[in-house]
Image (cartoon, rainbow, N blue to C red; front, side, top):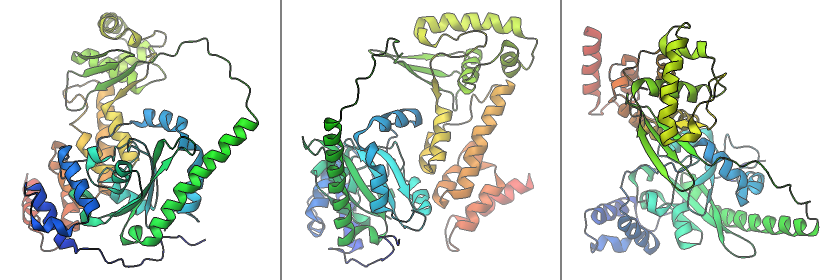
Length: 441
């Protein structure tokens, strides 16, 4: 079956791209009364003003509200989880590789829960943060089809320069809200993002029809469930620990441990050795023997006496700030999963969010540590970031990476940037000079 997006039709915008861009610049400059704003669609103009009132940055990346683990659990329980196959069948029939668009399903808050479609489009849009877990509400990124559709509670098309965020202006999108079929409560949003083919009248009809089909399917499933109710589930007797913990180790030697419980949050700074121990336990979630943990942290399998003494001190620290995180013994392991900012970067890379991953990369993992396990994990994160960016990222993201400590001395990276820049780019001269200097050293 051919893709509904394969037939591209040119749609004349109500105003030219140049006029819209100039009106946008005037608004950002504080000239809200500029006459050029009258040339912009009222829907877009009012959305721009709401974006300004929310203090949205004109080149801000969307916040990543849901990490990989939270995303998996949240969307498993979301009302739209059962209709994803329907979305694929209606908007991406016959597969997604040649669709030319990215299709997203978000929740009522504007957070993207599923992003599928053309791999190339998803790679490019991932650079601007259009990835699963990211918040695309108007309050987070300004005018966009999914965020504005939620704000207005109706289907919306946003073309190129009409986006408030400059990073999004190369793209166009159509989105429609999805409601509970009985209460009419907003459940989420369906969005199609791509080139001009994503904002044709046919695209809006198809996205609207998909939203209505989803609501119908939800109602049918609900009626069937009422007619044939499932037996009541057994009540769990074991209490589930609700604590969530994040260990921040990028670009710092004294790690920060952030712990969120049912009714409180704590942030504690750990000493270098405690940071190394806790990070190794977070990386090796299955647990480690005393000998193996000693080898990873001290570089010596015979360091078990020293290790056990340090673990006693770590336990005392954790008992004060986060009792649920006190490690178990034989093997040493954490009873509560600890997320790390380094793992969050790896997760972003897996989702193609290169620009967001680079922004989240604050530096090397515990940069002054010489523990063998830390050095190995540090190299894993650094290598994964470099390889993912060099394989798929845009030249703008690569140039940003070239300004970091890790990228600034990477001759191959600089050469790749040089090869991707247009022949007359003013940035070429600086890259050539940096390459020559590194080669001379």
